[in-house]
Amino acid sequence: MAFALSEDREREFSAILSRYPNKMAACIPVLHLCQEANGNWISQEVIEFVAARLDLGTAHVKGVVTFYSLFNESPPGKHQVWVCRTLSCALRGSGQLLEHCEKKLGVHLGGTTADGKITLRTAECLASCGTAPVMQVDRTYHENLTVESVDRILDTLRRD
Amino acid sequence: MLERTQYLTKLYGQPDSWTLAAYERAGGYRAVRKAIALSREALVDELKKAHIRGRGGAGFDCGTKMSFMPKEVKRPHYLVVNADEGEPGTFKDRSIMELNPHSLVEGCIIGAHAIGAQVAYIYVRDELHLAKARLNDAINEARAKGYLGARGMGTGAPIEIHVHTGAGAYICGEETSLLNSLEGRRGEPRLKPPFPAQAGAFGCPTTVNNVETIATLPTAIEMGGDAFSKLSALHHFGDGGVRLFGISGHVKRPGLYECKVGLTLRELIYDLGGGILDDRGLLGVIPGGSSCPVHRPDEIVNVPNDPRFEPYNGKSILDLPLGVDTFRAVGGMLGTCCAIVLSDAVDPVMALHNLMAFYKHESCGQCTPCREGCGWIMRILDKVVAGTATMDELDRIADIASDITGNTICAFGDGAAQPALAFVKRYRKNFEDYVMTGGKSQTRQLTP
Image 1 (cartoon, each protein chain N blue to C red):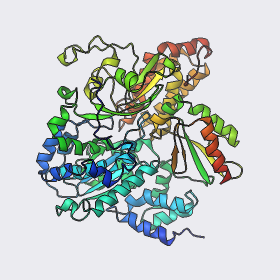
Image 2: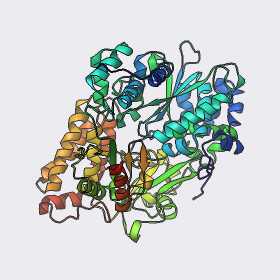
Image 3: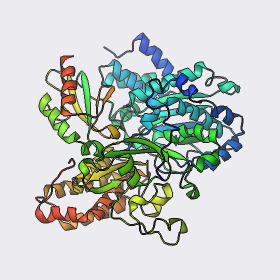
């Protein structure tokens, strides 16, 4: 079935377009909108939809999708977890936390748990260095992490 | 010189600090009325007197940058705020957007008036969902009050602010790549000239400023440019006012502190940061984001032929006031003023290995020296860590880094080369030990 937006998201689509002097500028916000509507990933149908609605070539849209790290080109798990690996977090033990997450979830970095619940990734600096180590779960930051707090967060996600 | 201030941060910690009510209770939206009563030229002159050096890392004077915009508005002018905060070690802009978003909204109205713009875009990295929500709420509150909209601040001229979201790319913090990303393209930097003031967003004259720079405008206007500049201990360097100082890594009290410009690293680390974690020794400090060269505490300031440096010559780098020009003069870089502290528990080879992985991942790939060079340095560092590198290859790191420097479209290349050059030069013995012992003599630790 071809990709389409719900009525609510169509309204959001029009609101996005109204902010810019041309349609191309809406490309990234519209891709975010569509990714959210499509189970957090950008399929070929989504690329064709965005290209058609914004009068862009599919090659342009595909080029944008592949440039940015937060557009998923395959479906992730229900929840996405990013552990910051850059220096300030690494100095505060994010390397050890990452190993702990891999072991606890039984996945390698970049992988998704067998039940499809959690995708584990690293992030480059999340701009939260003063409260390192930090991870992002979906849209929320968790700061000053310890092994215990990571366990609590992951357990909650697994039950969801 | 340690003097903490509370201009940008006065609302931090209050339960409703991000609301219009709290902001106005604390005197907010007074400065903007003063600013719009001035002509464009008079406002830019006032900002020049404030000596606000760009808070995003390059340290360019804000008023001067705004003066580059065409005097006559023949095409739309745009103000673009760079909120793509992602320089490793830097976490100040996020706090402004989350805890004091109205200072940025008010700053945008002032900045837009100074450059003849009617639209401002705030480019926020996608990860900062709370910051985007708080900004959008603040913009809606300001619009409902008539500060934004068709007759902004009752002047009859329209002013609108939009939040634009990125999608995960450090390079979009570079101003021309940010503009490409704003226009819906891949975030690859553009050749300059033309500079944004000639042809920026949508081919129109544009000024791109950092969040903290713009959020500082209300304070500077409220106080008057000259009075604001004189708050700084480096007023005579043309580096004025107050700014946010961040500290992360191995200190007891990591966090953000607002102080007068001219604070020293020693004050930041030992007074504000509470000293080194576990009372260990200090291996080194990166003063303002990972693209700045790392400094060792035994580095001595020596800037002859400039009388302004007389008080500091012969002293430790830790006692040199943190300023754009003071650190440039010693071959360093102030950057974003958010320091990363490495205690002597850290293996500096592993620290550089961590940073180069970042630069290799984030190089946009447009220019060959940066795309290939970051990968080559990473591959050599992998060998160093594995204990299979040669002395020859250690020298090659510096060769490759020097070949990146100055040979790319944007400053990312220099930003990636600087840490490699500085770490290998200042901790040469640690790198050599890896080669000599096949990687057996080192702790390989980043944590205490």
